[in-house]
Length: 298
Ligand SMILES: [Zn+2]
Image 1 (cartoon, rainbow, N blue to C red):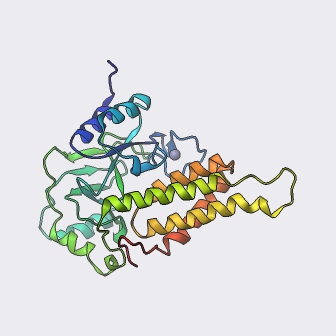
Image 2: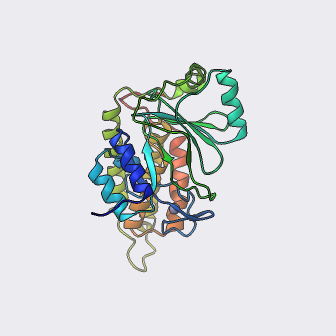
Image 3: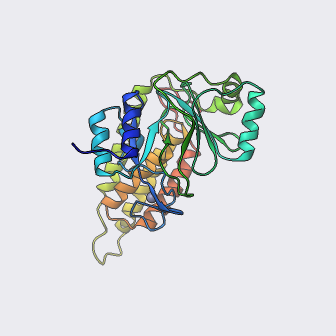
């Protein structure tokens, strides 16, 4: 019988509790990542599987297989189904949350992150991801994920439970937090009503865009031909289109970035050129969230 290490066992336990999980590249030292990229922008934070959080699963066999193959992989846990997570990055964020809660204790599971922040686990709210809904505070909801203990952080520490997650139901979000989430900024990113349908919609969109990038031919050898720009243009277009889905809160930025990276690699674009194109295309797309038939109006 093949044994699982501590990360594999923790991932399996989550899956059994109904939390969809997937493997994430682990940090290999301060600021370094187990991925092949020389200057990884998100060491220890990006998915090890191509579609990222969209491949998250509760299937114990799949989880075992992943962590047999990559025993050191960090654990990504999908948010939005068993729990949402209030992701507090800084002291300023912690202050903002304390003020909001005004004595109302957040009693649910809590993680001290490897970078000195906190993850507060609450019952799912139906919200998508929200970056900076309070200063220094992000929301990880539908379409998002968090890194869970005992994964390591590139800063050198490991994520650890302050109050553990158990098989029991996670308590609802404190009223103060819900109110902040429903604030004026929230109006721009409506909760999407049919999560399953959205996931499929996003998955189809990612596959389509990545296929188009991967299928764009390299320019003919020695050609000073406008086709030379073809692959970069295709990548930029795909990054913009998928960035619009990220902007609409339908999918996590890292998932899209991972899929685009992979597609760029398959059509032979250089790593740093591709990274630049993906970054700029996605930022433009995120700034123009796509209205979708499933909700997510601007
Ligand atoms: Zn990396």
